[in-house]
Length: 345
Image (tube, rainbow, N blue to C red):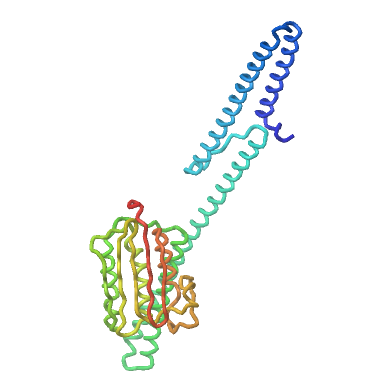
């Protein structure tokens, strides 16, 4: 039987068998020698046997408990970061087979973690190399394009071509920058520096960032929220995320429309809302807008590259936040961003 492969269990049952045998022999001996007082003697022997059985059970289960406590301690040590922690499994039996399997699992997890670390390091280096390789030709193309513009003052056709070329270069640069940012976040090569930031100040800076465009397109940006709300975050990255959402709102509103930026603080949460009264999002697209490079068949935007909102979502989730969207065609779109504040829980 497999149960007897465990040395402790085998010892436990052997001890019980010995005690039972000794009790049986003693009872037979006493019955023959002291027949008259056999009832009392048998009772005493029975009590002695019970005490012996309880003693052995207490010893055995105490030992098993100590083994389990040691195993749990090693598992907790591994979870706490000690990747060399292992459970002693030098004996035979089902329990030690389980311990051996746990040790094997730990070794496999270590190997996967090492491979993942190497992959991230490789990806980080590759991204850095690509970044340097792309920035140089883009900068050169922008310079050449500027020189062509200077030389094309009296050539309207060439000037129009150069203008379109510049727009495409800007679009390419935006694509490259967003690709680099989102890939670095995926690779874990960026460490967010989270410090308490004033939400009102960040929203005012975002408004200032888009003020010129809003004025040129005759759109209004409205800010609403308390001046003393603090949020632990990486200011530059979070402004990048919310800025992408505001840009998306400007892209899908027309002259005279409004973009509202609102922020609130609850018991354990800070909420930021970006709302517009623009064209809205088609119901078919609503569940896909955070997918990278997603292009809607209903969209009239030919300049979008499909990375702004996915990048925003990645940054927000890196801050342990969530983002939800609600939209109605012809009515507008609302993005709701929630950040839990652990110290407030």
